[in-house]
Image (tube, rainbow, N blue to C red; front, side, top):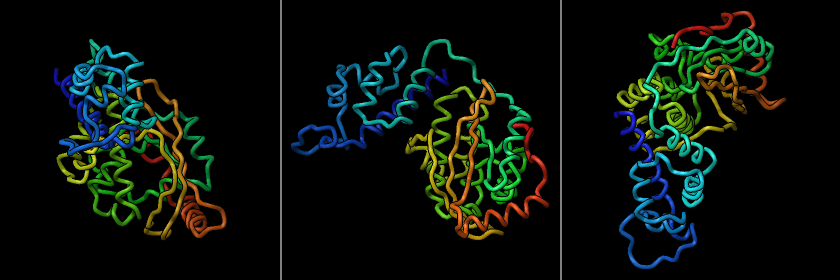
Length: 301
């Protein structure tokens, strides 16, 4: 019962926030007079989606079980959801189906040797694997050196694996490491929000969100915004304690390592001929002789 209530609250908050972000002008509706609520009214969303106001009101209150994909598509188009937000809405609908699985703690997945061999073969880029909770589960030597502040953070103690969310929200030093801390924090919370939609029964994830919500006001603010991110990539800038300022491009790729848990392979690299490439080469040289092999590869969750 608790889980279903949580699901309804997530649906209600998500749809209401997205509705409030749209203006009548953005959806081609005329405007006149003073509006009592920000954004669109429920009845306006209902008309645009081709459903009754009563039906949409019920949906926005979290009663999403049994709703057809066509209706969810219509609501997604009306609210102008992007691909990640649409996927999240469909995940919430799937989680609301009858006879949900009991909440459970997913067992840690060992990294197959072939994946570690792949990581180790990448020498001039930082390559690592994360799970959906943003634990770092495997790295090559350069990634271990690049993210040394994350691995050496006090937030690792007692948890076995470094975790990007704990680092950014619970370690003040992360503000020095990430040149755009606000952007990193926003993406981090949005990735966890999407994971919660995919795996609402993951006890470890719920515990992580609870821990961050209790200890970090910044996380509570980000979590309440209900932003969702699944596919992402781009440029990040770091102030590395040994290599100085680095501007790196990154791209996560889905890594089908287990049917029980989603994993991503992420590669950070620098534009050839730039000071950032020189910085990566410096870290690679240091890592080749100092970094421990395969840290945290099979540590527990």
